[in-house]
Length: 151
Ligand code: CO
Image 1 (cartoon, rainbow, N blue to C red):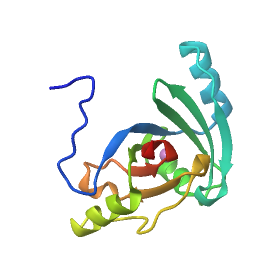
Image 2 (image 1 turned 135 degrees about the vertical axis):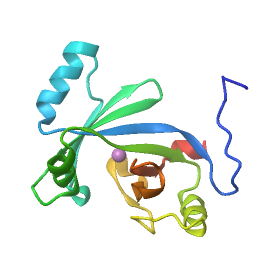
Image 3 (image 1 turned 90 degrees about the vertical axis):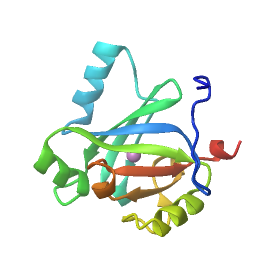
């Protein structure tokens, strides 16, 4: 095992480059950020409203990955419904992929339930797509293609 470069997908078209972020649903973004700052000494490098997803989000950089804190914009949004059902906590896991179309093509061919059949624009202006948690042990998966993934 090459622990310096352990990633190894055996599937053609699917290349996960890293864990981009872990999304965490919170009731109050300011409170959540204050906790991370006080306990872990970290500040968000980005805070933005993503209307299309019904969230205000903050990104805390940790190494090459982020913690993404998500506060719903209104009661009818998916994150508000998640909070209602489960309370605060981990909402999704986001894998960076080299080629999001190829990744979605592979997932569709394998019968994965795609929430987004085509990529859409998410935070940071990046192309993203969500995959239903059913086939991944109730873990909602987000894919993101960053320009960096092409570097
Ligand atoms: Co996310």
